[in-house]
Length: 267
Image (cartoon, rainbow, N blue to C red; front, side, top):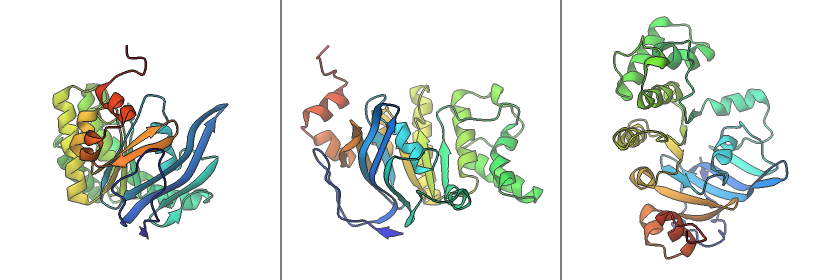
Protein backbone atom coordinates (compact mmCIF):
# COMPACT_ATOMS: atom_id res chain seq x y z
CA UNK A 1 0.00 0.00 0.00
CA UNK A 2 1.15 3.60 -0.46
CA UNK A 3 0.52 6.70 1.59
CA UNK A 4 -1.56 9.38 -0.07
CA UNK A 5 0.55 12.30 -1.32
CA UNK A 6 -0.66 15.84 -0.69
CA UNK A 7 -4.07 16.23 -2.37
CA UNK A 8 -4.03 17.53 -5.92
CA UNK A 9 -5.65 20.87 -6.66
CA UNK A 10 -9.10 20.47 -8.21
CA UNK A 11 -10.64 23.20 -10.39
CA UNK A 12 -13.23 24.06 -7.74
CA UNK A 13 -13.01 21.96 -4.62
CA UNK A 14 -11.49 18.78 -3.29
CA UNK A 15 -12.62 17.87 0.19
CA UNK A 16 -12.09 15.09 2.71
CA UNK A 17 -8.35 15.21 2.05
CA UNK A 18 -6.85 12.90 4.65
CA UNK A 19 -3.75 10.74 4.62
CA UNK A 20 -5.04 7.27 3.85
CA UNK A 21 -3.74 3.93 2.72
CA UNK A 22 -4.28 3.93 -1.01
CA UNK A 23 -5.22 1.08 -3.28
CA UNK A 24 -5.27 3.29 -6.39
CA UNK A 25 -3.57 6.61 -7.11
CA UNK A 26 -3.97 8.42 -10.43
CA UNK A 27 -1.68 11.34 -11.24
CA UNK A 28 -1.86 13.75 -14.18
CA UNK A 29 -3.68 11.32 -16.46
CA UNK A 30 -4.30 12.61 -19.98
CA UNK A 31 -5.90 10.93 -22.97
CA UNK A 32 -6.93 12.18 -26.40
CA UNK A 33 -8.89 10.11 -28.90
CA UNK A 34 -8.23 11.43 -32.39
CA UNK A 35 -8.55 15.20 -31.96
CA UNK A 36 -10.73 15.12 -28.85
CA UNK A 37 -9.13 15.51 -25.43
CA UNK A 38 -11.00 13.15 -23.09
CA UNK A 39 -8.87 13.27 -19.93
CA UNK A 40 -7.03 16.50 -19.14
CA UNK A 41 -4.89 15.75 -16.13
CA UNK A 42 -6.92 13.53 -13.81
CA UNK A 43 -5.72 13.23 -10.20
CA UNK A 44 -7.61 10.74 -8.07
CA UNK A 45 -7.12 8.66 -4.92
CA UNK A 46 -9.01 5.51 -3.95
CA UNK A 47 -8.45 4.29 -0.40
CA UNK A 48 -8.09 0.62 0.40
CA UNK A 49 -11.47 -0.96 1.13
CA UNK A 50 -13.60 2.02 0.13
CA UNK A 51 -16.21 2.48 -2.58
CA UNK A 52 -15.52 5.45 -4.84
CA UNK A 53 -18.28 6.50 -7.23
CA UNK A 54 -17.38 8.47 -10.35
CA UNK A 55 -20.16 10.63 -11.79
CA UNK A 56 -20.34 13.15 -14.61
CA UNK A 57 -22.10 14.01 -17.82
CA UNK A 58 -22.42 11.49 -20.66
CA UNK A 59 -19.35 11.40 -22.88
CA UNK A 60 -17.23 13.02 -20.18
CA UNK A 61 -14.64 10.26 -19.97
CA UNK A 62 -15.82 8.19 -17.00
CA UNK A 63 -15.67 4.82 -18.77
CA UNK A 64 -12.41 5.83 -20.46
CA UNK A 65 -10.92 6.50 -17.03
CA UNK A 66 -12.19 3.16 -15.75
CA UNK A 67 -10.57 1.28 -18.65
CA UNK A 68 -7.24 2.94 -17.87
CA UNK A 69 -7.34 1.55 -14.33
CA UNK A 70 -7.18 -2.03 -15.59
CA UNK A 71 -4.80 -1.36 -18.47
CA UNK A 72 -7.38 -1.75 -21.24
CA UNK A 73 -6.38 1.70 -22.49
CA UNK A 74 -3.05 3.48 -22.33
CA UNK A 75 -2.86 7.20 -21.50
CA UNK A 76 -0.90 9.85 -23.36
CA UNK A 77 0.66 10.98 -20.09
CA UNK A 78 0.38 10.48 -16.34
CA UNK A 79 0.68 7.66 -13.83
CA UNK A 80 -1.60 4.97 -12.40
CA UNK A 81 -0.50 3.29 -9.18
CA UNK A 82 -2.15 0.12 -7.89
CA UNK A 83 -0.96 -1.13 -4.51
CA UNK A 84 2.18 0.94 -4.82
CA UNK A 85 3.12 -0.12 -8.36
CA UNK A 86 2.94 2.12 -11.41
CA UNK A 87 1.17 -0.02 -14.02
CA UNK A 88 2.10 2.13 -17.00
CA UNK A 89 4.92 0.80 -19.11
CA UNK A 90 4.75 -2.68 -17.61
CA UNK A 91 5.33 -5.72 -19.77
CA UNK A 92 2.27 -7.78 -20.65
CA UNK A 93 3.38 -10.44 -18.19
CA UNK A 94 3.63 -7.99 -15.30
CA UNK A 95 0.43 -6.27 -16.37
CA UNK A 96 -1.31 -9.65 -16.22
CA UNK A 97 -0.25 -9.91 -12.58
CA UNK A 98 -1.86 -6.53 -11.90
CA UNK A 99 -5.04 -7.51 -13.73
CA UNK A 100 -5.40 -10.53 -11.46
CA UNK A 101 -5.92 -8.03 -8.65
CA UNK A 102 -8.68 -6.22 -10.53
CA UNK A 103 -12.13 -7.51 -11.49
CA UNK A 104 -14.40 -5.55 -13.81
CA UNK A 105 -18.16 -5.68 -14.37
CA UNK A 106 -19.16 -4.31 -17.77
CA UNK A 107 -22.56 -2.72 -18.43
CA UNK A 108 -24.01 -5.75 -20.20
CA UNK A 109 -22.39 -8.32 -17.94
CA UNK A 110 -20.39 -9.47 -21.01
CA UNK A 111 -21.30 -13.13 -20.53
CA UNK A 112 -20.36 -15.82 -23.06
CA UNK A 113 -23.65 -16.78 -24.72
CA UNK A 114 -22.52 -20.35 -25.44
CA UNK A 115 -21.59 -21.07 -21.83
CA UNK A 116 -23.77 -21.92 -18.85
CA UNK A 117 -23.80 -19.79 -15.73
CA UNK A 118 -21.35 -22.17 -14.08
CA UNK A 119 -19.02 -22.16 -17.07
CA UNK A 120 -19.07 -18.36 -17.27
CA UNK A 121 -18.14 -17.97 -13.62
CA UNK A 122 -15.47 -20.68 -13.79
CA UNK A 123 -13.87 -19.23 -16.93
CA UNK A 124 -11.31 -16.99 -15.13
CA UNK A 125 -10.23 -19.95 -12.99
CA UNK A 126 -9.61 -22.11 -16.05
CA UNK A 127 -7.72 -19.22 -17.68
CA UNK A 128 -5.52 -19.01 -14.58
CA UNK A 129 -4.61 -22.69 -14.93
CA UNK A 130 -6.83 -24.17 -12.22
CA UNK A 131 -7.52 -27.83 -13.02
CA UNK A 132 -9.06 -29.13 -9.80
CA UNK A 133 -12.68 -29.73 -10.80
CA UNK A 134 -13.90 -29.98 -7.21
CA UNK A 135 -12.13 -26.76 -6.20
CA UNK A 136 -13.62 -24.94 -9.18
CA UNK A 137 -17.12 -26.20 -8.40
CA UNK A 138 -16.75 -25.17 -4.77
CA UNK A 139 -15.66 -21.66 -5.75
CA UNK A 140 -18.53 -21.34 -8.25
CA UNK A 141 -21.00 -22.47 -5.56
CA UNK A 142 -19.61 -19.84 -3.21
CA UNK A 143 -19.90 -17.08 -5.78
CA UNK A 144 -23.49 -18.03 -6.65
CA UNK A 145 -24.33 -17.90 -2.94
CA UNK A 146 -22.72 -14.46 -2.67
CA UNK A 147 -24.79 -13.04 -5.56
CA UNK A 148 -27.93 -14.90 -4.42
CA UNK A 149 -28.25 -17.16 -7.45
CA UNK A 150 -27.89 -20.54 -5.79
CA UNK A 151 -28.85 -23.48 -8.00
CA UNK A 152 -28.63 -21.55 -11.29
CA UNK A 153 -25.52 -23.38 -12.52
CA UNK A 154 -26.98 -24.81 -15.72
CA UNK A 155 -28.92 -21.84 -17.03
CA UNK A 156 -27.84 -20.17 -20.27
CA UNK A 157 -27.45 -16.38 -20.50
CA UNK A 158 -30.41 -16.15 -22.89
CA UNK A 159 -32.65 -17.40 -20.08
CA UNK A 160 -31.47 -14.81 -17.54
CA UNK A 161 -33.05 -11.46 -16.75
CA UNK A 162 -30.98 -8.29 -16.97
CA UNK A 163 -30.42 -8.25 -13.23
CA UNK A 164 -29.39 -11.91 -13.18
CA UNK A 165 -26.88 -11.31 -15.98
CA UNK A 166 -25.34 -8.51 -13.93
CA UNK A 167 -25.09 -10.81 -10.92
CA UNK A 168 -23.46 -13.61 -12.91
CA UNK A 169 -21.06 -11.11 -14.45
CA UNK A 170 -20.21 -9.87 -10.98
CA UNK A 171 -19.70 -13.42 -9.71
CA UNK A 172 -17.28 -14.01 -12.56
CA UNK A 173 -15.41 -10.78 -11.81
CA UNK A 174 -14.84 -11.71 -8.15
CA UNK A 175 -14.29 -15.48 -8.46
CA UNK A 176 -10.51 -14.99 -8.22
CA UNK A 177 -10.89 -12.75 -5.16
CA UNK A 178 -9.51 -9.52 -6.63
CA UNK A 179 -8.41 -6.61 -4.44
CA UNK A 180 -10.33 -4.15 -6.64
CA UNK A 181 -13.64 -4.38 -8.49
CA UNK A 182 -14.51 -1.86 -11.20
CA UNK A 183 -18.18 -1.36 -12.11
CA UNK A 184 -19.28 0.30 -15.35
CA UNK A 185 -22.90 1.45 -14.92
CA UNK A 186 -23.94 -1.55 -12.80
CA UNK A 187 -27.61 -0.48 -12.60
CA UNK A 188 -28.05 0.70 -16.21
CA UNK A 189 -31.25 -0.62 -17.77
CA UNK A 190 -32.56 -2.11 -14.52
CA UNK A 191 -35.77 -1.24 -12.72
CA UNK A 192 -35.56 0.48 -9.30
CA UNK A 193 -36.11 -2.71 -7.30
CA UNK A 194 -33.40 -4.67 -9.13
CA UNK A 195 -31.10 -1.63 -9.01
CA UNK A 196 -31.50 -1.51 -5.24
CA UNK A 197 -30.58 -5.20 -4.99
CA UNK A 198 -27.42 -4.59 -7.05
CA UNK A 199 -26.49 -1.64 -4.82
CA UNK A 200 -26.91 -3.78 -1.71
CA UNK A 201 -24.80 -6.49 -3.31
CA UNK A 202 -21.97 -4.04 -4.01
CA UNK A 203 -22.01 -2.98 -0.36
CA UNK A 204 -22.15 -6.58 0.83
CA UNK A 205 -19.13 -7.52 -1.28
CA UNK A 206 -17.20 -4.63 0.19
CA UNK A 207 -18.02 -5.77 3.71
CA UNK A 208 -17.53 -9.51 3.14
CA UNK A 209 -14.36 -9.48 1.05
CA UNK A 210 -13.00 -6.01 1.95
CA UNK A 211 -12.64 -5.18 -1.72
CA UNK A 212 -11.94 -1.70 -3.03
CA UNK A 213 -14.67 -0.64 -5.47
CA UNK A 214 -14.75 2.00 -8.20
CA UNK A 215 -18.21 2.55 -9.64
CA UNK A 216 -19.08 4.62 -12.72
CA UNK A 217 -22.76 5.57 -12.75
CA UNK A 218 -25.36 8.13 -13.81
CA UNK A 219 -27.72 6.86 -11.12
CA UNK A 220 -27.49 9.39 -8.26
CA UNK A 221 -29.68 7.30 -5.97
CA UNK A 222 -27.20 4.46 -6.36
CA UNK A 223 -24.27 6.82 -5.88
CA UNK A 224 -25.61 8.14 -2.59
CA UNK A 225 -26.42 4.60 -1.41
CA UNK A 226 -23.06 2.93 -2.03
CA UNK A 227 -20.40 5.67 -2.04
CA UNK A 228 -17.84 6.36 0.63
CA UNK A 229 -16.60 9.15 -1.63
CA UNK A 230 -17.84 10.65 -4.90
CA UNK A 231 -15.73 12.17 -7.68
CA UNK A 232 -17.36 14.43 -10.28
CA UNK A 233 -15.51 14.31 -13.61
CA UNK A 234 -16.00 17.48 -15.63
CA UNK A 235 -14.18 18.52 -18.81
CA UNK A 236 -11.56 15.87 -18.29
CA UNK A 237 -10.66 16.72 -14.68
CA UNK A 238 -11.90 15.91 -11.19
CA UNK A 239 -14.03 18.95 -10.44
CA UNK A 240 -15.28 17.69 -7.06
CA UNK A 241 -14.20 15.02 -4.62
CA UNK A 242 -15.92 14.39 -1.31
CA UNK A 243 -18.59 12.51 0.58
CA UNK A 244 -22.24 12.21 -0.43
CA UNK A 245 -23.17 14.73 2.24
CA UNK A 246 -20.55 17.20 1.05
CA UNK A 247 -21.81 16.89 -2.52
CA UNK A 248 -25.44 17.41 -1.54
CA UNK A 249 -24.57 20.40 0.62
CA UNK A 250 -22.44 22.07 -2.06
CA UNK A 251 -23.76 25.38 -3.38
CA UNK A 252 -21.61 25.24 -6.50
CA UNK A 253 -23.90 26.01 -9.48
CA UNK A 254 -22.33 23.38 -11.75
CA UNK A 255 -22.82 20.64 -9.16
CA UNK A 256 -26.33 21.79 -8.36
CA UNK A 257 -27.27 21.76 -12.05
CA UNK A 258 -25.99 18.20 -12.37
CA UNK A 259 -27.75 16.94 -9.24
CA UNK A 260 -31.04 18.56 -10.25
CA UNK A 261 -30.75 17.56 -13.91
CA UNK A 262 -30.77 21.13 -15.19
CA UNK A 263 -29.27 21.90 -18.59
CA UNK A 264 -26.94 24.87 -18.94
CA UNK A 265 -29.41 26.61 -21.23
CA UNK A 266 -32.17 26.29 -18.64
CA UNK A 267 -34.44 24.26 -20.94
